[in-house]
Length: 347
Image (cartoon, rainbow, N blue to C red; front, side, top):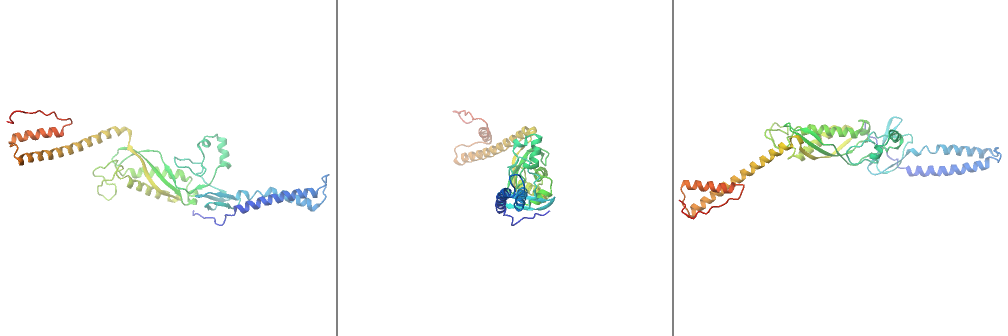
């Protein structure tokens, strides 16, 4: 199904003015005909005037027919029209249009509410909570069938997914999307909003299963057969782009364009979050200790070189080992050292 744009239909104002003028003229002529065509005793006084009055009365009954063909569109809105079940065309762009009055607008997703930015005159939560009878009335005539062409943001619920190492994580994404082909969106899928939401969930699971939460050894996330440092936490931009491409490949047939996808929430699942926190803390402590020891060894080496080069103290191997031990204890300890002053001989 290809989109067919209806052009040259921005004559709604002229048609509306014409209908109003015709109504006024018909009313005036009908009153004139009745006043001059019938006598006080309801007998026909003038046949032409009586016929004129009847014709004007019939016109008043049928002049409303063009009214349903008047359509008003604001910027970034569209109407998909069908005529007796057949696709008639699409109106796009702001303006006051007139189309075949027997055309009907169709939008199967007009009442669908997702966790996203609002559509054109979408149904409010209060309307969604109305009774069954009120909902039926809304379905029959009160729902707006315009399709929004604006960029909208879909924020699906957080999902619990296992990464490539089997660790359960919780992740949420925000997808910026818009309708680019109204005919495909309306006729190729049952409900393009629900279809998009489902494909977002599916694509998110497919991509997240490729990556570990954090950098892990021996994991290939690019598919080239070589381990790399890709991860959900460290490569969020790359992961988001792959998610966008995956979703786009699935929704192109529905006439939708995925503008951007972003990771909005990323964390370990609660059942393993405490254990992973302890692991991260242990890793951080080990790295900090390693840095402290490397710095302490360098300071000890520098201290011994300065003492030997200056000739201040001559230490044998045993005293040198004792000094190294004392310096390392002072430099690597968690608490401040309590010095003891030795006023006697070093030996």
